[in-house]
Length: 447
Image (cartoon, rainbow, N blue to C red; front, side, top):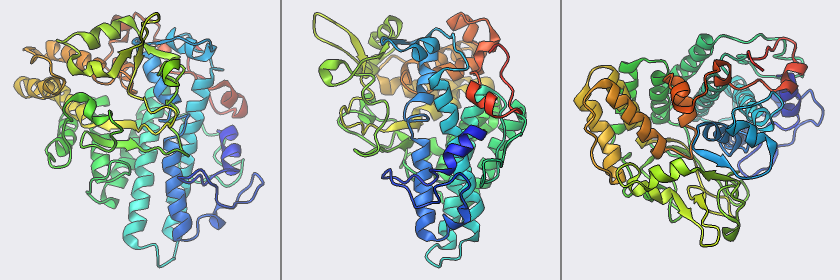
């Protein structure tokens, strides 16, 4: 953490337009002088969303760690770091791992500043309701950040206080997996009453918290709660629904559609880091990430992929190369980054209901997603058959999102599906630079 703290203190308040508020240039920044009124609080919360959507986090590297690990995406470039991910031969010096770890903790540290300073602001332009909204957003984003850390690295250091000097929040041992998950739930619980139950696909609301809780409870095998929280959004059909056809949520410059529960918006000055990695050179991209033959076959199968085949396309001869189309707005880089879609909540509820023995209801949720994709209804009639069908549905529904790897780990299926039997490889290594900087931080077994 010490390495991250030093770099963060020199650049805390990154705003939505990539500008910095004026802060002291040394390493020991007095943040009580940085967030003092309504305008600086608003800048800081905008900066928090920028942290979440940064290249290291949902803008590229964290998501790529997930889908490059999931067995369906191949690396076609020459860099060593992505090759380590696809081969699951990661080292503690992997640049993608280090970038993601640092970006997530920077997001947490920015949330901590907001949580500590905003309650003390007396500016009349910052109303009580707006204060609560900002605090709720900070709690929820910190919860999401720790959720991503625990599913990626296992138990981690819980840094819950603002960091004002490089010596703050160092020498803290790692918490357990259960303790880290408990903090996620604590933050989500704190966020919920502070937020309004409005619909906003680019900012955190109470509904966003419900969606994150549905995912959280699924990972914790708390089936009734997962069903309950997923239902809160599925039942809100006036605001959330499966886009038809499938491509309607991303094609033709679509953004913030009813399919989306929470997505990161990008602009010409704040680009989505994915924007040039998927498309071929003929379309101004680099095509260094590409769907492999198995995924191409699944998406092109009318009984499996259906109209989700619109996620991929093929170059003209002589290459005939398949490429992904979810991030296609090259050279603009303004594609949204999708964090939660309503399709996931249908599949969360389907799995929860299958685990609860509600077979017919589980099948109905699964088939809602399949119907949108234009594929025949599933006839899965047992819990085991349903769970396998849901696994395949996730594979073709979210192939370019941070989904498959984490869910195969969660369900204990990674050895069977991907052939990775060394359980030490089911978590990521802690960056070696962080281990060297903080003696209290220990490495994951096997690295």
